[in-house]
Length: 85
Image (tube, rainbow, N blue to C red; front, side, top):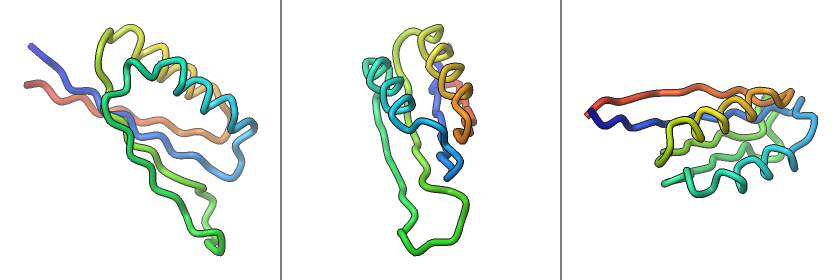
């Protein structure tokens, strides 16, 4: 049974190293079918800088590695949705 994996990545103002997150996304770009980003306006007083939604594709193990690496970055919250077709 085929599965669709969607990762939601919330980046907060407490992120320690935004470049690290970007490097992980670049490393696993072959596993990202679609990427949609939402940004908070500069005058926003929320603790969130942005939200990224990604539809993942390819090797499930690689997708899991990407998810694990992103979760290790302070200030990044990752949630996963899996849809079975």
